[in-house]
Image 1 (cartoon, rainbow, N blue to C red):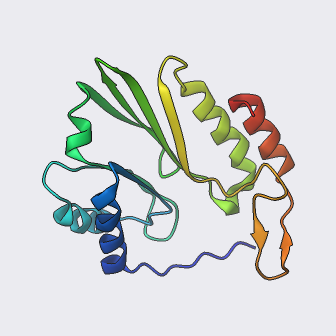
Image 2 (image 1 turned 60 degrees about the vertical axis):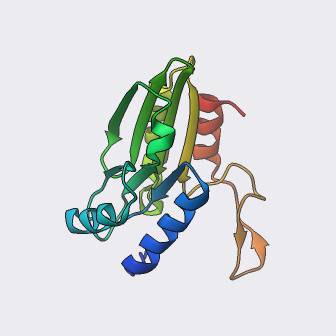
Length: 173
């Protein structure tokens, strides 16, 4: 059985995003549990010129977002946000005179372990080897036994063998 924490503290979340934007060009978010209303609230607080891209399911599950400073975006002539799997995987493709950058924002639901391999393949299929790629977010699986510590027991968790093997097969070591 998978239990989700449904707490969502908008003021703290907004303050944290704005704080991160103070020293970073972009902020990636996973498990946003976003709604159109929450998206509008956050958008109102973002500095002028800041771009906000998201894909979400509902206020109880999943969701991904990418916030990018306008000053960073000025380095690119083309940008394209593509949702590969609603609320789970999206890519922001940036292209310019200096090259291309693809940002993948992901959320692999821990309650849908059977889908982790499918989503890994979806990402791998859309990667452009000529572009610089960054893949970040909530994967909810680990490739090594020492990647995740179990607070309750004080031991290392076990690697998710099938998901890890597919990740390495598709993305490399």
